[in-house]
Length: 139
Image (cartoon, rainbow, N blue to C red; front, side):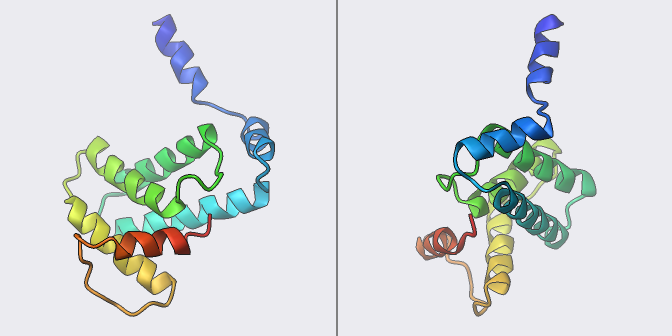
């Protein structure tokens, strides 16, 4: 029981500790907050299009924020990929069945609309979409 309590305490950070991690890596706290808000909006929009319950959407956003509490946003992991990963993990945690292909298709549609790109059919076997996500990511 004591080990469980210590493990849960590790997940909680104060605002100062969270900001301090970003400053140590040379990241502007305002930019990180802006990127986190952007990612939370993308997750919310994806959850609406996927018709996911609110609990699943909230779980995805919590996973994203907890990840970035421990790992500063330093550009080594594109924000778009993390948002997709958090939605996928949230569907598994909350036992909401969605295919990975559906999640990828929804994010493809969302990112095309956000960046003003024409609608196109997602080719799962192509690396073109992944490369465009990496180049267009605001992080």
